Length: 282
Image (cartoon, rainbow, N blue to C red; front, side):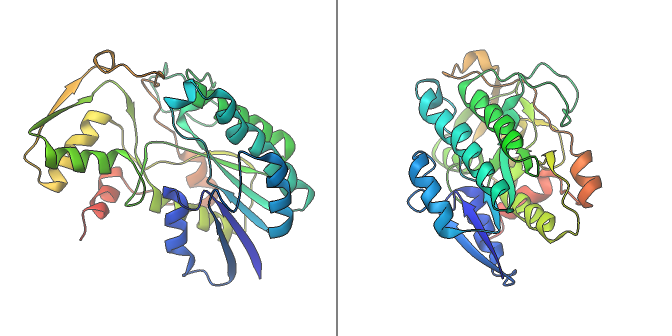
């Protein structure tokens, strides 16, 4: 029986993989939170990987506090670069499969067309820099790795935009949401299923892939969809990013082109609206 190690087990993607795992009893699933896999302690991480001895690693763990990373650069790079490099090296030396999760924040937002896997990267914040460094070190240490870039992740678990909007729309009469950042949301349950579909496939084609739900929207339009589905009475206004300054810059346009992953793994990717509805099913 193949042993699958899932890092970041308490995060959104890790939680969705945990939900799906019971449907795949042919694997021994090990869900490791930050106590079981210490991505910020590299010496201990080596020991933990050797003890667990996985056949497959799904690296969903990451430093994801985008604004906080601006003042915690060393920690962000330790988790998103050095730990990734170590995991990739371990996987290569032990002939284990590795799927590593990355982000649309490796791009600078200057494009006006959907970004494919070969588009030039140029991160504009520390978080994006650390994730891009992780991608490079991952493929260098283990050319057999698969990296999946995703964007705007949400689920019923953890903290995310959808849950924040649900709370604010119940508490407030009106809110403002930025309307000049364009991309596409990712329902973590869809991404979790896509990852398992890749593992179950007879193909293993290393490299970088993009995955998000289909559709092109702004955060403001996403908020309007949440309002509509939740039937909230809150008034939602659109504002430019300049009116809502944050410590870390965000890319204005980071829509991901998913042709590659759909063609290589024959994946059917739902639209963002189709998947968003699932959050509101009681």
